[in-house]
Length: 87
Image (cartoon, rainbow, N blue to C red):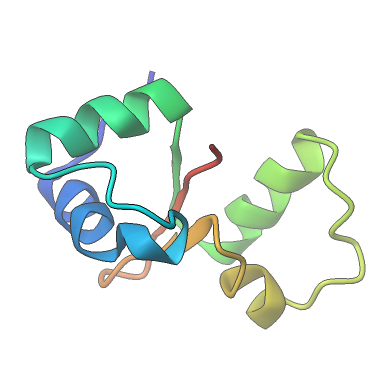
């Protein structure tokens, strides 16, 4: 199971509209539960993001790194890591 640090939780809480049309979480505790329920993944770099989607069978072969970063389920964290949240 993934561990979500405070940066991941705060960033998702503040930017959940990137993925969701309605606000789903109101505080850090709800954010953690939501991310756990979605089995969200934290990746240290874009190479790991690409590997994650490849392992999941997603057809991303023609996507550039920038297009991958712009996907609604990929959150670019302020420290350079990535949070992948699939609902």
